[in-house]
Amino acid sequence: MGLYVQDNQMSIGDTLGLGFMTFAFFLGAGNLIFPPFAGMLAGENMLLAMLGFLITAVGLPLVGLIAVAKAQGKVMAMLPVFAATALAIAIYIIIGPAFAAPRTGLVAYEIGAKPFIDNTTATIMFGSTELNLSQLLYTMGFFIVTMLLALFPGKLLDSVGKVLTPILLILLIGLAVSVMFLPAFDAGVPVAEYARHPLTKGVLEGYNTMDTLASLMFGMLIIDILRKKGVDAPAAQTKYLIRAALIAASGLAFVYVSLFFLGATAGDIAAGAKNGGEILTNYVTHQFGGLGTVLLSTVVTLACLTTAVGLVSACSEFFNELMPKLSYRFLVIFFSVICALVANVGLTQLIAISIPVLMTVYPVAIALVAVTFLTGFFRNPQFSHRAALLVALFFGILDGMKVAAGSLVGENGQASNGLAQGFVDLVNGMAPALSKLPLYEEGMAWLMPTAIVIVLCLFVGKPQQAKVA
Image (cartoon, rainbow, N blue to C red; front, side):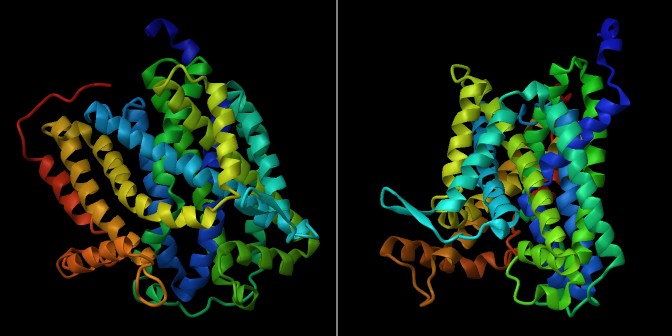
């Protein structure tokens, strides 16, 4: 490796481009929508809520990228092959075609296109399903562009990192400056949990971005891009991935802080808003009129597009390695088509189904990041990885069952059929015992048991030399 040190150097411009690309991959639909809504609800308690949000929406993804770098992309190397493959497939499907990627196209339509469309009620029949015509046409176009960008991964650094992202940054800086210097109203009264536990509520709200899951995908994608750029030395890959992670984390923190301020000072502008997207739209329309609407639509469209490109590329790379007979280009086209379909058919139902799955898988991903980062400190790294993830999965399943049972209960307090009611009764029967677990009611029953296991593994077990990836 020493003979090729010079070939593993990147220019400052390329490093910044890599960092901007990483930032753009993370900055998607949820990242723009959740902070202003949380800021509005937190009101005067915005600072504590924002701190909690930054811990989980910036801190965890940053640590996740660094963990991937330290493990040279092999974050699941100490798990049984079957378990590692199953976990990886679950993460890629959830973050990719099943949920996050289709959401980027749908939010881009709602905020970036719908304000400029005169008739948004026209429909077309697709079999027995009625589809919104303008939404169908827009999402088809959106994912065609996504597909074209993802088909040429070697050019991702140039097309995304050096072209789209600087434009996105300029637009976000403009919005942030207006938020800081043109506040609409004073911060309001905090609502619900934001009044009682703003820090904890902010931490929980940060999970909605799903960026810790994304960090496992994007970390491996960036390592692959670095290889294509001629950076082959593991030490050099780690160095540049960490630098990209720091640039991305700084950019995300800047965006979140400004959006929290926007939501907290929205006042009457946000009256009746049901999500952060409506707050953003109302704010920029109030401050900038038609120009503001164009600004917001451009920001959202670019943010969603760059995230969609990253998600489709990462999923295609993964399944190409898993099933080499399926080419990368075929998979890009396949996932782009699936995303376009999911964005138009039953998305609401899909979200309802996905939430319990996310509640189950997300704790495992967080535990994986933690144990990967701490691998060198465990007495028996392989046992520690498996024990921590097993505990996180067990209690994550309990959290997922609780959410699933809640989603099955209708307004009358009963499920729609006997099988569903049986499941609800099972969960309700377990509730008295499970409610004694710390943070069970908040949907984080996995946290304390997993943390205890990780700490114990630092001191317990037969010493074993950690494997070097």
